[in-house]
Image (cartoon, rainbow, N blue to C red):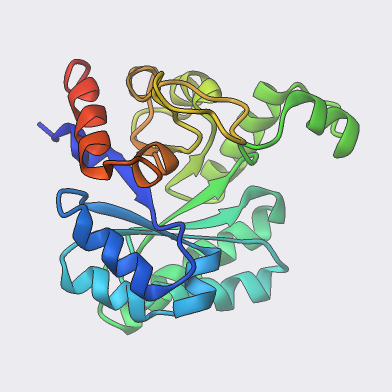
Length: 240
């Protein structure tokens, strides 16, 4: 049975490779790390190599969103890094999603790496129903929109989707058990919500059907990150 810690992805939301390595070394029990835009632009693939050398799993969260040819080229390049998860935006459309999925496998095969699980962003967790209706002018209710984006990803051959914890139960029911669901915006009751608008606790999100929980500031901004990580693992132990 997977350990509670295996469900937790900790973001390396720091601006430099040195700070990232210091955080990785400070939290040796974390097995799955997220590398996002800021850090990847700052350090490039060097940090990915350091994570691989430490036998860590990698969520490369670059959220590609472009025309199909450009998406394919980016995912082909990313496939060679041997990462476990790679994000693209579902709103790029089916042709781009299919191209991204195929290209990521090609890039991995060319470098003799395991292919990454390409997963789609449904809707950023900083956005609300009001944002969807009044800023983006999308006439669907937020849960329906998130579901449609997840179904588009599934129909395009992708491995899963990123969604807020509040949509995960519906997506799990409709998309089935083999579709990976990754939830950012997860916050323990003892942590501040920050800019996350559609949140649940780690235990609630896991019970609702999430495979992985992206938990950053409650751990990394804590006065004692090691204790905070262990506290979340202890909370999850009751539900896994």
